[in-house]
Length: 458
Image (cartoon, rainbow, N blue to C red):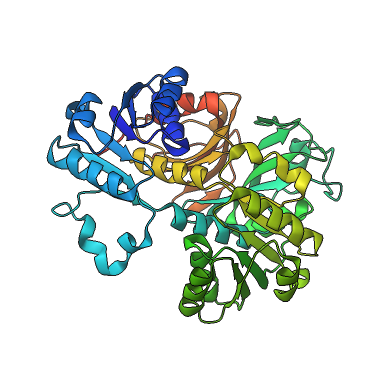
């Protein structure tokens, strides 16, 4: 496949890394020569310096032969024009654009992206994706990472193990015997900064971060087994009333269970706008790191603080101060992956990386067809893949233990005709089964070949 990626920032670079590693012909376009050079030096891609919306630049990138274009520059308008030029001049089949401005996505303007108007096949909105990620965090507050699969029937949860975990130093094989009815599997363990797929004889230790795939209805029991009982989130403080903060507050207002939400916003105009748009939420104007303002927001009795300003350091420091003042749980929006290792030292419970969330959303649409969903873990250390078994796949008609998955891959869940099946080595896969597979980065191409994934256009 010939794919053009417009924008060589973190999102574009990560997508290029994924797609170029799967034997695709990838070109990356950016008007910053340093970013293009970084991509071409590290990846098997062609680099083109220039404005992505210019027809001559797209032609130089190979638009006449391109199957797909992904417009992920920092400008919504450049992304939109790029897709229009790709359609009108080069007849590119599939066009994906990242758009941030909420006004473009308003229902009243839903006809804007029709093929005869602005021909964009898939619109990715980072703020919407981040808001959804934050709401998932609130639904599973004792996790540091959480993602839904198979229409919400299966959930991936990241759990940090502390000294209160009752199953420390217990082999995973023994855990399976002790909790035979538990529909959950440990698919990944991060120990001393290294992520690996565990063997049945491996034990879990204090300080480990584990990834568990569980049937959603069994998640609460799973968390309790690992010493992380669920707690209701009834009082929430949000620092930042931008698109993400406002979106989360709106969503919390519509939940059946009543949640008390307070929003802190530094910019007066934005605070007034938020107050006008929210019904039950209290909006406070001021600095989210100010102790007096946090006291006014009753941070000492809050169940969670979500810091989603446009500054990573502000988010982290607001979480640190809130935790010091008695807040039970803190979540920070962090764009810079180099800051993530500091979170444990700072006592921040969880983070949301908008770029990783956006990359996962784009990959989900790129691999259209039998791969139904993709979620990237950490800084691209691993992927969790939701895929359907094809009749022609080497998986069909064989037991999991006979397939020979690579060492860095584990099947976490199987859905047969709508019914969850906890996978074992004797589970036989059939055409139409839906799998959730954890795979380390280097093993993803092997999993892709086993699934015989092909991008389908329609």
